[in-house]
Length: 443
Image (cartoon, rainbow, N blue to C red; front, side, top):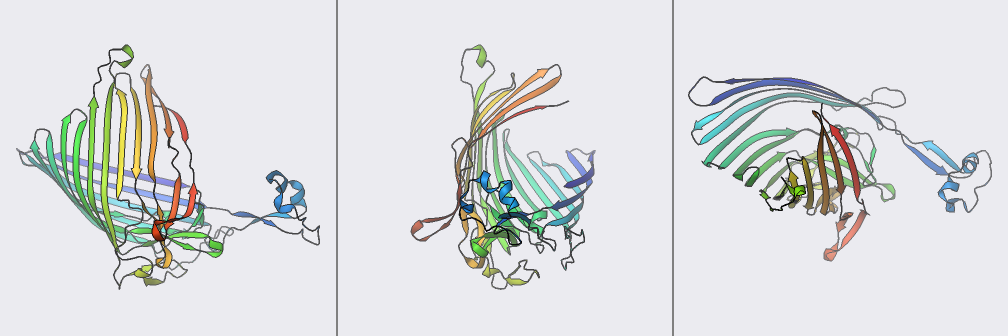
């Protein structure tokens, strides 16, 4: 259960000078508290207690409705027992408090050049407190809360090279905090991958330096073409790491890699087409095509002197290169990501129908422990259909929505790359095609 309280104030003053210059300042506060707990139960098979009847030989081969029958349970051949962990493995309280302030100046430098310069200050405290689910007592821990403050500057320059074209340059520093579930030692199961997960209380914030340049051409109303370059340097990025437990069970946790860089290019395009169909049902309708593509390269850097903290009860430090191959791709980063949308839009009738194709290339799903081979996944190509129609009853709009997801029935495949390009499949399943219908309104 999460409880979130937040508030903020912003002030803007347009300076009484010849050029268009605006000063802005503000403050915000956010308090997020979470209580999470889980209970775990398992069935055990065996002979009945106290010298009861011996379990028959056919017991394991029964149909499920017979296997879980009252008779089998009454004989003690099948028992339901709680296996919930103690010592903070099943419950925790967590808190994140963030106080932020900012100041910004935005305005015209020359008739064709505008700039925005600002800085944000953040003071944050984040903590996870495991407790014993049976007694409610907090579990003693040597891990201190994450208490950090940052000055995060940002600069943007926009150069209008023509009436409908501009070049934009940006530079900023940002942060990424670990999620509560990534910090908590609570055990939980990922239902999609049927994998045991637990957090690492020794994670720290990731700090990012971002640079980008973008060309933007707005050649019509709602129509555009953009092309951009980007570069990111990330200190202490959080990555998922996998290892094998008893009985070949896969476990997954998280670590801070020493450093990573990501760079690449991205393109976006949108265009409307007037087909010219002379029919009442088509009046006001037009086709549109929208697409975007991102190419990126990533690299994780782990020097010989770098260490990582992995939760083993003590948060012991170990060489980063024992877990992370220097120069490898970032976990979760694909080289190619593409999106194509083709649809019909009618603003007069508040109708939109869109066919959406998405493609994501191969990426690391989780790192292999002790430099074993990484788990890979290739999301591949998916196709969705989304329909939205808004009707008005007086002044009240009611929107009907329909969506069909994964129309191509693309399956999930997590694997290890073997010799000769062969794949050793770790997890494969068909998520299937899903359909949804929605009704929404505003008042």
